[in-house]
Amino acid sequence: MSKTRVVITGAGGGGANNIISTIKEREKYDLIGFDISSYKVARANVDSRFVVPPASSPDYEEKICEIINKEKPDLIIPTNDPEVEKLSEIRDSLKTKLFFPDHASVALCLNKWKFHNFAIENGIRVAETYHVKSLEDVEPIFSKFNLELLWCRAIKGAGSKGATKVKDSEQAKWWIKYWNEMRGMQISDFTISEFLPGKDFACQSTWKNGRLILMKAAERLSYIEAASRPSNMSSSPELAKTVYDTNLFDFCIDVIEKLSDGKAHGNYDIDIKMNSKNELCVTEINIGRFFMITNLFNLSGEHSMIDTYLKLAIGVDPNISNPFDFSEKYLIRSLDTLPTVLSPEEITKRLDS
View 1 (cartoon, one colour):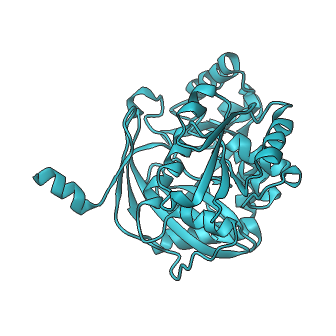
View 2 (view 1 turned 135 degrees about the vertical axis):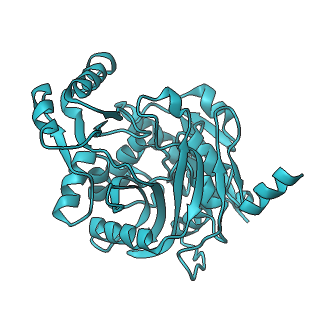
C-alpha cells in the first residue's frame, strides 16, 4: 500500500516538530520537510528535505511549485503565518491539496486590526482596541481608558511579536519607537487595547464543509521564558492543561461560524482571554495551521488532532461521534528539552516513585 505524501513547511521548527512527533499513524505517511534553514531542516524527523526561500521572497512560489511538481505530494501543511498567507494566495497554482479555510477568512485573521473590526461588526466579544496611526495618537488613546494597564501589540505576527503591557503613554511610545527604529516596523503596525487580566485559553478545532469534526481546548498556566519578556507572558506556555468547558466551546463555535459564514473548512486556532468581568474575549485567530501546543491536543482524548486533520484532508472519514473529545492532560515544556504530556495520575505516580 502506497504511503500518503505530505509536505510540512517550517519542518525544523518547534511547531512542526510537535506535529511530526505526535502523528499516531506515522507509518502511513511519507513526510517531506520544507524550511528556509538548511540546519533546521536537517534535524527534522522527515523522509526527505528541501531548503526553500522565505514566503516573502519573490522566488517562493516558483521554488515550491517546482518541488511539488517533482515530488507530487498529496497534501501540504503550513506551520507558520507567512506561509499560511502565501499558500492561500497561490492555492490555485499548487498541484497538491490544501485543507484550508477560504482566502478571505485567512487574510482577515492574519491582520489583527481587520479582525477586530470584523468582530465588533458581528457581535464577537474582543478587547476595546484602537489603531495607532502615528505617535500623536497614543496620548488620546490612553485618555479613553481608566485602567492601570493597557496592551500594546503588533497587528501582524505570531508568538506575541511586538506585544507588551504598558502603564502610560510614554511607555507605549517608547515601545512602538523601539520596534520602528530597531526592528523595521511601521508606527501604524500597532494597536493599543485594554489589558485582559483573566484566564488564558487556546481552542483548536478542525472543520469540514461547515461541520465541526473535532474541538479541544487548553488553559495556559505559565509561559516559557516569561521572566525574560517585557510582558512577562507569551502565547507559548511552559505549563498548560486541557479543559472541557461548554461555554468556551459554544463561544468558539459562534466565532468560527460567523467568520466562515457557516462554511468552516480546515483548522481554526483561537486565542482567548477573560476580561475583568470574567467574560471570554477573542485575542486572535491563528487560521489554517496548528498551535505550537498541538502535541497536547494530539496526545489527549481518543482522537488526535493531526491524525484527524490528515484523514479529512485526503478524504478519509475519521469516524468521530463526539467532537468534544477530552481527557485531562498537562503539557510541560522548557527550552532545550522535549515537551512532555502527562495525565494527573502519571504525574502523581512519578512523584511517588
